[in-house]
Image (cartoon, rainbow, N blue to C red; front, side):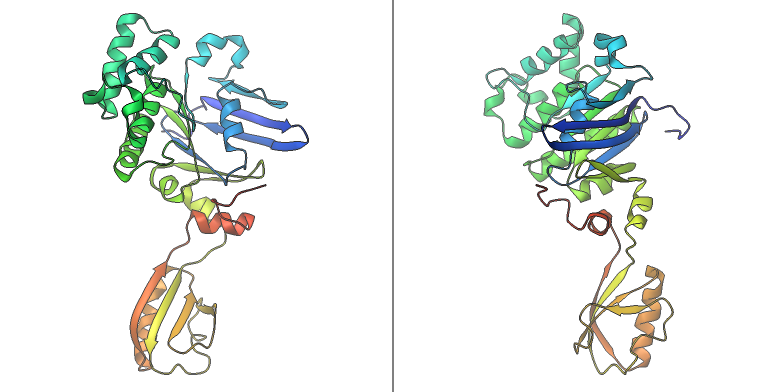
Length: 318
């Protein structure tokens, strides 16, 4: 992906009210071909409303959407086919087979009968459901239903894919298949907006993240940039035997003790970088302090979000 490449989907200063509740407040974002932009936030932060507006299912009270540089109303049918939406609630027909579900959505997107049949075969193979193509959806496990939900969203090969919590409630194997397929889809040139509150997923597959809280976009950028906005630093948690002198770690530049200070046998240190770990351990050896165990923690997205908002991504926002 080239950073100079024009966005294929943009939201420009969009706002949305539900009665007296402001769900979105002047949010702007964009996604380019070949990238996965993670839309992260706690429940109730405005993620689903944002995706619904981007998918042209919901109109913003203020602001506008551009698809390939054009407002959706200039060519609603043609521009709409550029989008693929995978909603959090399963959008499937329980009594239809996997192939029939995918074929139905392919035809809804304007594919001919022959093209729809071929696309169904291809997409079910891609998500690992080829051998279950003729089985009814209601007989599937939760993970298989999520895979079929994804298949129906990409059966028409949309250049923009919008995903709302696509791995909620799935087993580890199905989650791996979903994440791998999404990454391959972006690597093939599609633009993806991935809404989730699972930090480990965002850190694994997203090229860029957008943190949203209480309807406001509070931070955006690549992982390193957003993590740095949280102001966190690496930490080392030590368990040791021996006696630490007064002043403890004060002589090590950029190292300070945090947390419960003075508890014998345990210490937590904050450092400028992980490169100082060796210096800390060497300093303890010179003091005849025997380190029994230590754990390292690097700042991550969860740390950044807590620092920027005061709560975790899994908190319920009321």
